[in-house]
Amino acid sequence: MVEEIEILPHAASVLAPADYPGAMTSAPFGTLLTAMVTPMTPDGAIDHEGLERVVDHLLSTGHDGIVVNGTTGESATLTTQESIEVVAFVAARVDGRAHVVAGAGSNDTAHAVALARSLAEVGASGLLVVTPYYNKPPQRGLLAHFRAIADATDLPVCLYDIPGRSGIAIETDTILALAEHPRIVAMKDAKADFFAAAQIMAATDLAWYSGDDVLVLPHVGQGAVGLIGVTTHLAGRQYRALIEAAIAGRRDEAIALNQQLAPIADAVMNTSQGAIMAKAGLVELGVLSSAAVRLPLIESTEAHLAKLRAGLQASGLL
Image 1 (cartoon, rainbow, N blue to C red):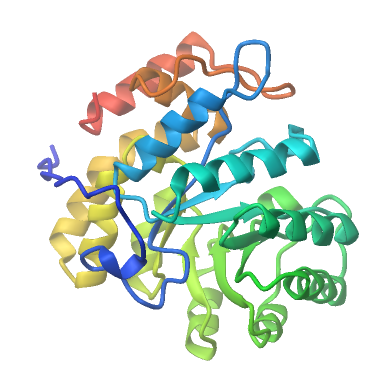
Image 2 (image 1 turned 135 degrees about the horizontal axis):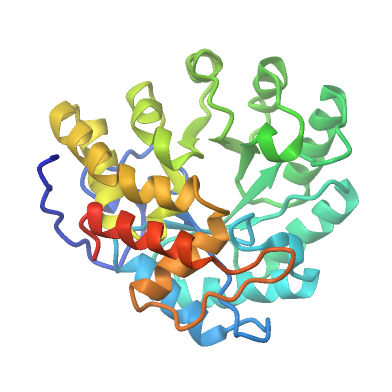
């Protein structure tokens, strides 16, 4: 049995990463970010009241950044106009209290460039740009793609390397070349190549973010500045405490928190799909009234909900 760590709440009025104890000034988008769900009504429409509740919930649980219009935000099934409107809505609700990083990924470079410009106009403070998916461009194509998006606005850019979804990894030499661009400042790493990550962090000024909830401790242990998570919808204070303990070198505390969070991370990340489970968890916590998702995603089965509830209880969240 892992000793439960007491988590102290953080204030919601956040203006900069340095406002948080233990935060690093080299974290351009903060240290704790959630790839936020896009709440929907049972008929599939965007739920604006739900958006407000989720934003307020994240700000009240230690977040200094929110990613909007990412995979967990169901960007694949939002129209371009919906994506822009959701980013604008969240930016207005956040009102400077945290970074609002907008997903501008596409496997069509021209579309990604146009989207990035629109997102900058409606209040995004940064861009998250995933590797082009499905069409598997060569590394030279990736260089040109990411540079074109970074050139399109004045916003800082976080690359997103997730070969399990995109079908192609961003190779080390490509990342090193991209790091020379003045607006490419960070990496969300969901590749789990720790040796390559260490090499790149040693050779560049890129801020490294764990893109895998279950690997945040080893990532921070070798130099990452924080986490862009999904389970963080449900355990923001605990993940903030984990990150701060790891950065501060409080090894035993960080290990205990990591073990405490393992059941809920397993339930959210290894049961079904992240957006499905995060929405279901937010319903369990009373933040949302509906866990609706758009097809081809589908709501959780009773068996998955039972595992989710067990994970919430085991991690001390219910």
